[in-house]
Length: 129
Image 1 (spheres, helix red, strand yellow):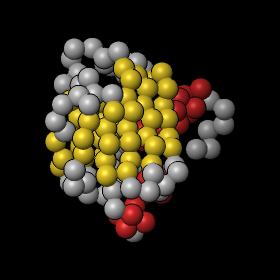
Image 2 (cartoon, rainbow, N blue to C red):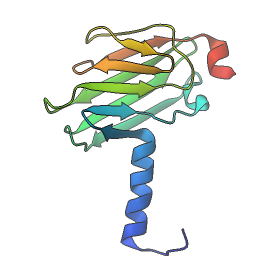
Image 3 (cartoon, rainbow, N blue to C red):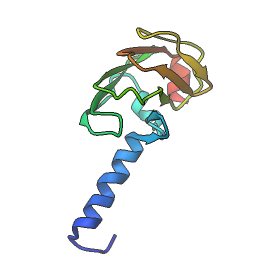
Image 4 (cartoon, rainbow, N blue to C red):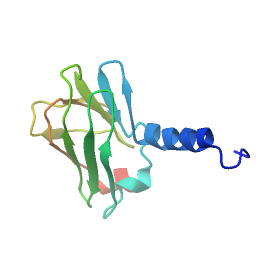
């Protein structure tokens, strides 16, 4: 940024990375609003630990395999959180989780609060194209 070692410049960079991984919007938590397609290739994994949010701290991990992507969630969420939106880099046909029905809206999943695991089945050409 050309601003040297200023604390505010470092804070802006940290907030940028945080907002690329997750952010709060009204009464929902949005995960991976920009999900690079190569993060979905088999063997890739990303994790966020002890992330503070307006709704309470949480962890999440995304593991990609040849035919599926798994989202693991752990959190101590406030009752004000109504849902979690997870964005993927390709349209999803079907997803299942352990916390109730998941709404599929093209490449966005609407996940009920209390869900700790979501599995999305993929077709290899979706991930590679």
